[in-house]
Image (tube, rainbow, N blue to C red; front, side, top):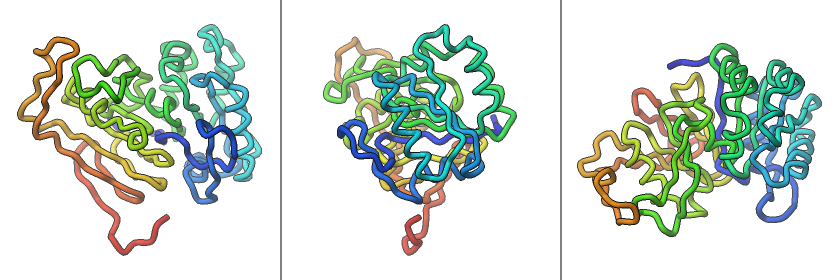
Length: 285
């Protein structure tokens, strides 16, 4: 279904220009992902709301984003501090969602986002605005993974590919056709995403490398941005999938899983499953 808003899921560790502990290190690239978030939101004067709900250190993460957006000339950046479900019913947070041009969800634990925000007034207004207005919803790592209708809630990369290694749950539902995974290359999450699409063979699996993201326009087409790669698993023509009949803990087999490796500037039509790759001699942007 076509929507008016734009989604920007990011694979984690997007360039921010702040030297901190490696887990939160985000270098700065003027024309990088955060700069694209600002442009899609309407420019430096846009109202940007940072949502560090997923993080175990929300104050520090919020401060990092305030500094990063400040470097890009943004002067209207606020923090929506939701640390419990009751906060998603508070009028000041509802008002932030109503006035925002962009909401930026931080990394951390994606289940914290769904537990504290899903099916609350904040979520309902956010979803309604995303459907009907040119609102930007961006998110990194956990903030990207929560965007899908079927969300990866956890799962060990070392134990995949055995049945039960991946935990699935309901996400925020902004994009129903995709399952999104993050830190995909560095943390070796190929097996994890493969099991996710084996469970939901009608959905596309999208694995985002770090400092790599998508700009999903109107819910129909995405463009790859950033410095890394995007892996797309298309399970529509799977010939063998024994996920349903196996006992938990048993190794799985899956055949004829179509795979695409995409990079900066490549485009993918989610509805038609068609690809437009950037010409080999095109400049990197």
